[in-house]
Length: 279
Image (cartoon, rainbow, N blue to C red):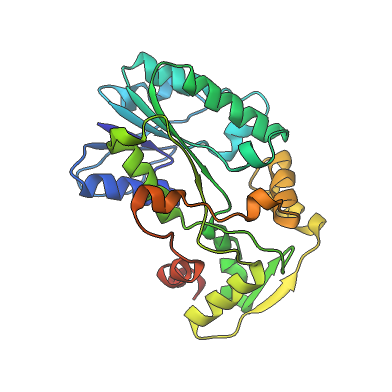
């Protein structure tokens, strides 16, 4: 049995499907009831209350650990989830971390995530760590304004980073869960090229077959919008990276190809597959 937390999200959903299609027994974990692929068991649990995970972890051999935004907030204790997994007899944990642990190690959220990585390393469990950069699916923040006004409003319109398709993260995670060769691996996951928000808007417009206007937000406007859904400190860290990426954050990593034997998908591919969200 493999347990997937965050199973209804942009990474967890394709990961759950991929594992099920590979013939694995899968338990999908999310806070609320959700539709899951045929043959997949669903358990509602809150990572902020590790005891609620016990029914999901019973009999599991592996865990994909994805932390929701509130698990990065002050007072949260994500290390307790690793403890619960170990106590339940889980043998392998694949942790979705963040590129910033290496590229900006002194930010508060990065310090906390590095501490969690260290807990996992020292746990005695088999482990692998995934460190993605920005997600292509963050463009879904623009879906409402594109549908209503054919406009993208975002900061730093001409500053790019090599964002990654969450489906590629999911495929790498599946490989790490199933293949012993990836035990002890730390993988930096990026897309195949640097792409700016303005270029992302152009790719969505091309997939729509309809023009999309770009509107530059100020940093303060963007932070106010992000703070509605993620902790303010995490929003601040994210905007710092998006506005002034350092050389390490501009680097296209070879790790997707190293694990999957193919190049990561470009943003245009993600836009075409998800274009229904913008119509």
